Image (tube, rainbow, N blue to C red; front, side):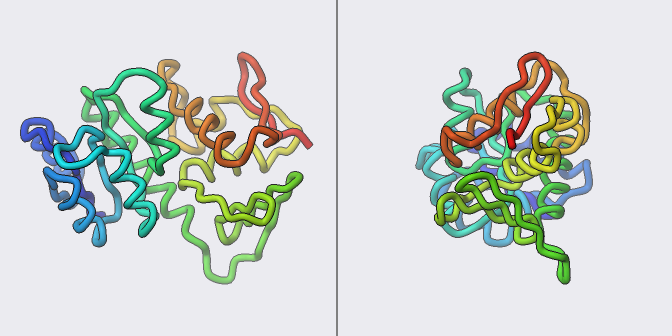
Length: 222
């Protein structure tokens, strides 16, 4: 797997590349956003720092998403829920706040790579379509349509939605979703799932029947 690291800080970039190379992946570093946009054409996954010298990281994401569905893991020093939600809405699949411990980074990259493989359509797979009101989810094609209009969902957003949609009317625990989507239990301190659900509600509309079961998880109402 080839990973493009878009990071302007030399020290941070070196540590990231070393960690990912030691994990067995082929890594290339780009210090500027414009260089990164050219390099991602050959990438299987992108690590993106939102604080770039030549463009805002959110603009990088929006530009990238107009041409590619390559998985993107955002690395940011920005604190607060707002930046994370904006990143997810702009097209990020997941995020981590710096500084990042090496085992956590490797685990998140592995999870993104796994979800990207799952998201690829399987030749000859039987089509399955799930519908709720104006929302139509084509499981085989991995696409979502809202009131006749296609909705761009990241691989992570789609996997979270499918995890809950496969049990309509049933409460699904946060731990169940974390095990399926991130490959491990909820660490308790992570807000990744909350931001993904918020992004789904934003993209699919406030009347999406995805409700929060306080202290437990989520349920897709039937």
